[in-house]
Each structure stands twice: as C-alpha cells, then as structure tokens.
Image (tube, rainbow, N blue to C red; front, side):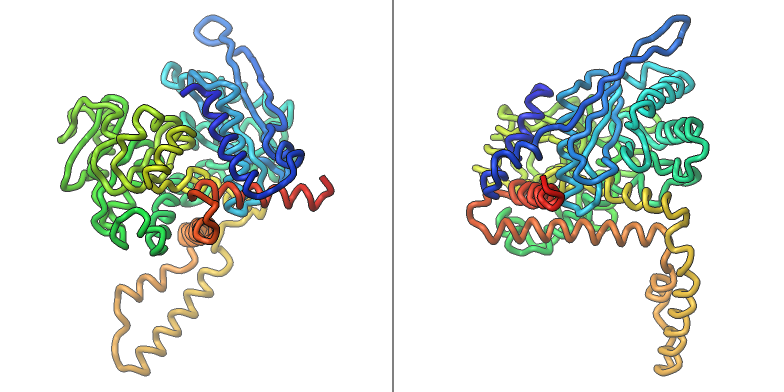
Length: 466
C-alpha cells in the first residue's frame, strides 16, 4: 500500500467514527485535517562534499500543547506517511487521556549508511532546523524515538537544543526517550512492548470480548506470531512468553522466519540477532516471507511497519485475534475483510500507546526535576516493615519471603512507571470495550476507540469556543 493509502486508511476510520458520533461536518473537518507540515532541507558537509537531507515535522492537532510524536529515520519516508502518523498520535493521546496534541517527524535517511559520528552531525543539524521554527520545544513540540532512532539520537537532540537555549531550565524536556543519565526515565525502552502485554492481559479479563474470538479465557499457553523483532516486538514477545506463559511459535523478520511449535526462546533469538545482524542460522529458521502471517496461531502481533496486512492476504489470516503493535499494519480494505470474517483487532492507537504514555511520565519528571519515588520510597518502606513486624508478632509466624520482598520493593521509579502504564492501558481498553459492547452500531474495537478519541478532541475544541 502506498503512503497516501496509509493516510486514507486513517481518515476512513475517522470518517466512520465521525458519522456514528453525529458531530457537525465543519467540526469533524477541523479535527481531521493536519494543522501544518514543515519540510526542511539542509546540507551537512560529509565525506568531502555537501550532503543534502530532507526532514519533516507534521503537527496534526494543537488542542493540547505541547504536541507529541516520534521522529523516524527511514529512506522512503514522505509527507503523507508523516501526516498519517501525526493523526494517529492525536487520537492515541486523546484515547489514553494524555494532555498532548499529535505530531510526527521524520528524516529521509538510511541510518545504516552513515558512521556514528556522521549520524550525530546530521541529527544535530536537523535539530537546529527544527529549533528555528519551535518544532522542538519543551512547551510546544516534544519529539521522541521512532523507527530508526533511539535514545542515542534523542540525547544528541536534547544536547543540541540545550546548547541553543542555555538558560532554559526545562531544556531537557524538549525530547523524551532519552538515556537515564540524561533525564530519561526507567522503563521507557520497554514501554511500548510492555503496553502490548498489559492490553492483552486486559483483553482476557473481558469475557464477552474473548468469547468473540473463540479462544479460552486466559493468556496461558496461547500461540503467538510476532512480525518484527525490533524494540517493540522483542519486549512484547519477551514479557508475554516469560511472564504470561505464551508460546511464541513464529517470529517474522526481513530475511525469513523462525518457527518452533514448542515456543521460541526469545532472549536467545534476540542475542543471535544482535551478534549476527539477523535471524538466519537460528534453529527453526526458514526462508519464508509474509505468508507466515497466515500461519495457524491464537494471536498475531504485527510489530514492524504499516500495511503488512492488506487485501491480498487478509483473507488468509488464521489467528482470531490481532494486536497492532506497529502503526497502521492493517490497511482499511483489509480491516473490513478481517471484521467480516469475525477476527478481532485491538487497534494500534490503543495497543501501542505504551511509548507515549511513559514519554508523558518522562516529560513530567523533567519539568519537576525530581526522580519518581525519591521522596516517599523510604517512608513507605518503614511503614511496610512495621506492618510486617506487627503481623509476625500477632501470628507468631514468619512473613512469607516472596511476599516480603515484593512489598518492600517499594515505590521505585520503575515500579511507579509500570503501575502508571498498566493503569493507563487497562483504563483505555475498558473504555473501548464498554463502548463496543453497548452499541450494536459500533462494528469493532477500532471504531469504538476512534469514537472516544474524536469525541474528546471535539469537546476540547468546543470548550474553547471553536
């Protein structure tokens, strides 16, 4: 599917939700359109000549500021793709009740073609171009990592912004997804994958929703196909296999797939990928392609790029439940086919919202200039120790060691981040499930989620007189 079709798919989902909400056409048009898209072209002298690069920053909605959205580095990125992703960020933040507007950025570059020092020069120069236009700013526009970028690029961007604004007390809040030592937050790297785990756990707490898939009522033993073992796919597969006893039976990557009906050891596969650069040579490797998406399984998790399930393969999908860990992995046409076949899809702007949720926590941490848990951890530790001692004294029995250690782990930053993330993911899924089951005109979870998001954005605009 072309990038323009990706944008059309997002807008089609929006249009269906808008019709069901009964909002006026003019208000819906205001919400749907992208507010602004900036294209910057800049030169960097590298390898003995001036290299010209093209970057994008799209602001979809400013109903809340700052606007939030990652920056991806990819060779074929274009304006339509960035605008579609910016729109998804608006709806994602609204659905998760995060006070950000939606934005997205990109640089048309293949990061693998440049040395680290060259990539740093390019990133710093891109940051300068964004800063000139306030497209990176703690109070207006806050980027984060995306495909092709990581905490390394975010550290370069934050440092360059700080260099340009040396007296800004909150300068390090200009981006999220930074290393811990540069204002990052514990749990950010794993956040999107952890959110996928939490959303699946919550799905299986809703009996009526699970019944629609024909699956049994718990995650234990479920067979999973994971397409894409990058940051999101790896952490989702790791947590679901090690903590929820799921079996990752198929992992799909560019050069093929790894298949093991008894369950792939995700840590070992990830280590193999790190050491060799791919999955080739790992036990169970086959030179197969996208057809593995249609293998027999209980849950399919597309966790790579958009449009991997389209009209050509949607009719072949066997998994009764799909969780969109990537942005836009299912085209609009394919979505209709899957819905008609009774396959349940947990949509991207709910399922993969863990990243922006923890980015919100990081932004708050940067603005307050204090690590989460620092003030209360030892006080709570003393309270729980006193309670445990009282129970032991009253019963004459030692407190179970497992429970003892769990209770005294206390309000560490990672515990608080995971608690906040789980609460956010569970709350969002509960809302869309309730809407889906309460109204027979709502055909699926995607429409329910979009209706909630669009209605919240609409209320925000109406409240300020628009």
